Image (cartoon, rainbow, N blue to C red; front, side, top):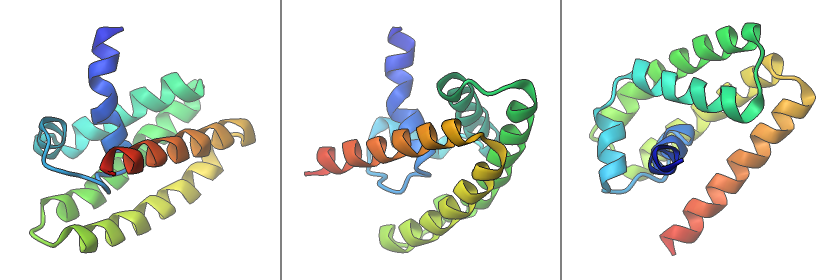
Length: 127
């Protein structure tokens, strides 16, 4: 349980593609990770939270890797936070649309609820 609690901030940040990244140890760890590592973390998190079946795990894993690779140049760039945020948000929207084709209605609803909850938590922490 302790390990999961320590990973939670990292997974939240990965889930939101570092849209609200700040200079913390967790963000630094995530920034230093490879797209493959981020995709693997995301897939494991989604498998546990959304009870994915074997076929869904394969599809979600491929999708997570695809978007982790698309996000990587943005995350590594020297652009400002706002510019990064806009680009990452657009990619996240694309990814969510693709996920809606993989997940069943209940899973997708849960995914959206968890995502919204994480965004709200991050906003509260920034205040």
